[in-house]
Image 1 (cartoon, helix red, strand yellow):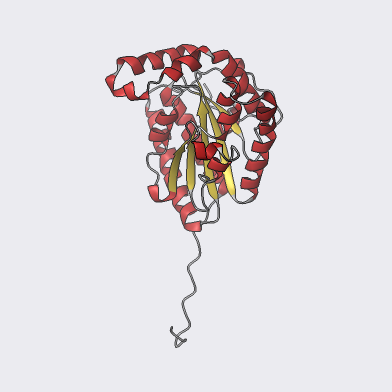
Image 2 (cartoon, helix red, strand yellow):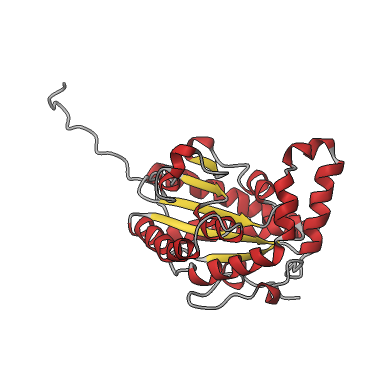
Length: 274
């Protein structure tokens, strides 16, 4: 089977309407788990990501923001640990957005987000993000409809401002099936090493699956822009999820084309020394 380019296959075209039932969460693009082809491609993309990061850091003119969203147990933590593992921590930071603190609630919903966006030369990875304010907030009815509906345009304006100031944004929705989610949540109960991941809120959100699907479909449809696209990543197969994400991140950095800075001019011989 011919392989397709993940950077275009999963991208949500601006202005298009997303229907998640049209996206197969178990899709593997013709690859085979554990095959030399998969291992070599993943290793190659991870090496390239590290090379691009070094240039990005040295150049210090651009930044990359990677947003990870998905249903509970979709693999946000796993994606970070497997795809971002080789990055230099001096130039990369991970921010996890949980329930807002009282101080954060006293500000606009983007206040806490903006503080975690990457500086020039840096890569930032968001584990959940500002999109929670049109997802969980909407589904759980934490604010009036008029409030969360206005946030789509506010998010687009915010992301447009970031991109105009040198931050490239790539947004990845990790798409799993309801059946796969149930399996993963059950493992959290059965495996002592995963008990810490379990929360009663997971069970509540699982029962709200259809509402979350509707909320995600609208967010993906309304907030995928040319400069800040959404990608719907098949995530039932963890190994393929990692392969697809690594390819998209590598190609995004390649498009940014960070360059090694030129060597500074040496001071003129006999010049004044301070």
